[in-house]
Length: 370
Ligand code: NAD
Ligand code: AHE
Ligand code: ZN
Image (tube, rainbow, N blue to C red; front, side):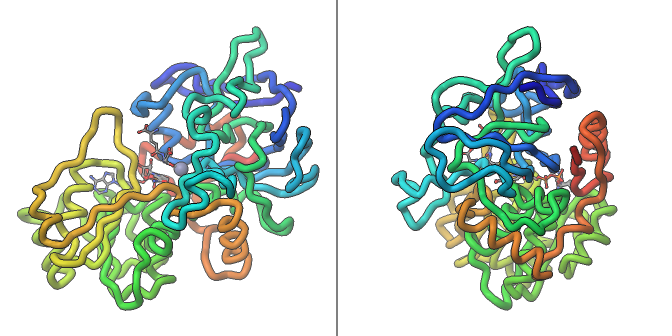
């Protein structure tokens, strides 16, 4: 079939909107009509050329929601008409990782996914002249139609609005999951969140759900304060307004250091600060942000010797087919909020405006509605 997509033709260039060819689903695969997709900073990370795994031409996008159109041979858990959220972290429920209680990092298709290919080693997308186009994070939600493995789709309830729950495909689950699944924050905790964007705000929302007492938000952009306060931030710190070093300032503000800190910026200097303002003896720092090719984190080992823990999280530690439908229920039941964070919507033809708004610090989430 032909479908409409935003193609990342070359690193650092705007996406090009064009008709593309899409082959039908093969064994174990599912054709999905994407109804809406968020634009996450990770899409920008890859578009810009900073992603060591980035390859071009590719169809980016990994925060979508849509409807099953057709299933390939052997697909048993989905049928045409089902509403689904694509999963860049699949859940095969069979691999060593899925069977281990301490990780959500299903590895069943990770190696081909990282090469922009379907599990059989080929791509379903091509340009009208036949040039192959790569998949991205196994999702490619910047295409009106896409093909995914069955294990990379969470089936969700049919009354959930696509233009809101698409955000559960990455940002909402990552932020809330980092708090609940990765950090396992206790009631009464003190926490610091670095970066009050589409992920950091969901960390704040998760901290409020978990019953944290003090939720400090740190961002260079003061325009993020209003939204962060609405979601539960109790104190705001703008590093550019702090006299002297940021770390001792935050340690003092949290009465000796935070029980939990979170990096949602992707800046390795911020990651170091986040570790070092975690409380001596027990503080945990969770890295969410993804850093450019070649970037490395550093600290004095003494920071760890004296009881701080450095951790990371992908997709908030969530097992997608199991957890995503539950998070959709939380949204539909009013336990979590999504709508105010979707600050802009646009048709696919205007997707590059969503990237411009992100750069300008004017949006939290832009959502493309097909
Ligand atoms: P975003 O652009 O919406 O937000 C980033 C925020 O960080 C902005 O508010 C910006 O002002 C702030 N910021 C930037 N530099 C800063 C600094 N030095 N100090 C303080 N604040 C600073 O991005 P997002 O969509 O929220 O994504 C955040 C990060 O999380 C990105 O690196 C993204 O790739 C990553 N991410 C990781 C996962 C995962 O599973 N680990 C999932 C989604 C996103
Ligand atoms: N390709 C990058 C790493 C990108 C990365 O860490 N991705 C996160 C999800 S970000 C979603 O917005 C992730 O899930 N990582 C685990 C994995 O297996 O990719 C690089 O540095 O090579
Ligand atoms: Zn993302």
